[in-house]
Length: 244
Image (tube, rainbow, N blue to C red; front, side):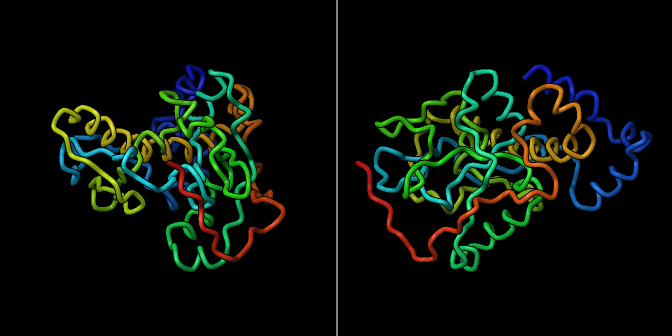
């Protein structure tokens, strides 16, 4: 993690990148990404303070199913390397069924993303594609070192509107004033996910060799390579079992 942080410090300056030999790369990057990092003070929190997922009362399994695959950030990769859990990373992303791409525009947008193509995902197991980080009791074996996307779920940042909202994928929630601190943490995590995405775009564009040197490059898909699983998934809908 320390090496990744140092690498970011070397590339975080917009002006420094523009004045470097990678100026053309930087201009192309800016044409595709908003590279400004966000700070919590500039973001509105539309989630009532102290609102968190009510997992014990929920019959859904948000850590299973192709649509719930977890895309990792460079920071997540560094953490998994540090704690010795690189076995949970997988370069090949799932081939989402066509009906899902048609019904879920967000997933179609994700599939078209260069960052999604380059970065690994958490492995999923079995026909029901249960997250490989879950224990037999369906508890996260990575907590508190779980990926940033898991940390903020279901808080979701709308970068254009500069606000954090409750994501549609979670239908079970509770409001408890004693959980205000946890709510604030999730709010900040939603912003961190966005900022880490910006950092990933910068480092993948400007520091690919350096990422190789610190051991992260081994878990990335090379540019232009097919990032998806070799066999397409069934186009039929499958009902996931309900875990109690």
